[in-house]
Image 1 (cartoon, rainbow, N blue to C red):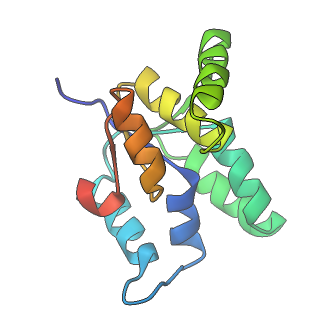
Image 2 (cartoon, rainbow, N blue to C red):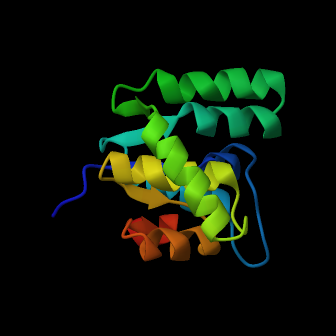
Length: 142
């Protein structure tokens, strides 16, 4: 079955907006390529993504970047149900708190939207796949 779009984890936005570089690669260029290739596809986000970005970015940068997300017509905001919140808490204890609660939420919201979770967190990708949720590095979705 064809996925309906992509749920992009906050780390991808941070790679892009902070122009992050690592040994022998530039995650920001990969993030930029991802958004260029999928610029017309449905991109999902949540208040949890925005909250994480707010923690990491300066207030000015966050406000500018937030507008870049919420103003795009192909971007859709998702909301977590009470049931999904309870499932996230169960998963959190099942995995012994090895992955952040917000990351579990990102995973469940991707499932809710029948979207591919795009993240740099390899542990999160493995967990998502274990729960039947499609998850990829951004370079694997190009």
